[in-house]
Image 1 (cartoon, rainbow, N blue to C red):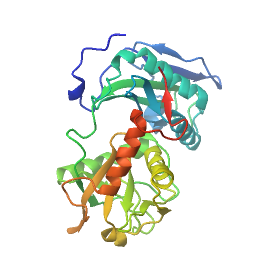
Image 2: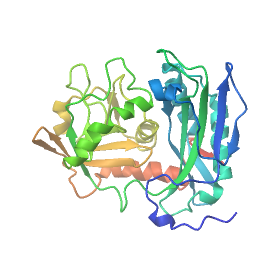
Image 3: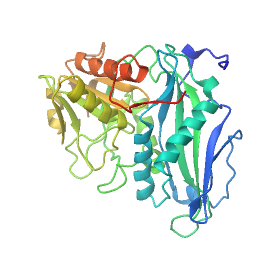
Image 4: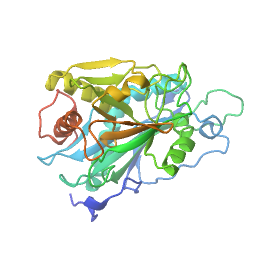
Length: 341
């Protein structure tokens, strides 16, 4: 297999059309057999449910080349389980978990020439998503749906390494109490666009969202979970029913407790205690860990002792261990690295 002639080390984190994508349709109460197609375009009625009531959800995971030349994905079954939760909350049909994993494998194999080589820092990003395709005028769930997986080669989320970022405490809420903050629904991200662009315009990299009920507890940003490190080395992650359960965060917590011997606390985190932490960061599929150097709380700066120069030592160790597992350099828990070819 000959790789595409790309400058792998200079890829942006943007969409690039590849050769194949997976498509399956839900019609007459059941999933039809899915298939790989070459056409990247979707033709829908103007009254399709995805347009009228935003009945849509998505996932994100990566395929990449390990040191021994294998092409793998990281915990695709967990992505499938989380999409199952999203579908059930949005009254959409669940695409079976085992079929989801097989579909990811098919897309990667079909686009193997687009998987970046080991050491390039790039990967093949997979975006599984589901949309309502049948006409819906009254407020109700659609009857027909489409599940797709697109693949695109992407560079590292942060060029030149993850430098500490500055974020702000948001005045807006990310999710409503007992709402949809715990699922990966497109509507959650649509409502966050105004606020993230406003943060960027004001010189901040992200928003720190507080709990919508009391506005005293740290929840997450628009697209990543928080990690905090206490001065004694304990890893702390915020707990809330409104937080999206990040696969990266759960993996890092396991690594911390079971591989590095760290104490881990998954609990409510008050904004008032953030200044007492030694390190802070964001975690997610795209960057794994993004260190935080400062948090601006309406003009008052919370400066993390780890500083603005580099990732703190504890988060760096977590980052190195998890990325080492993903790359095949470190042996991780069975089943985490899913070999495709």
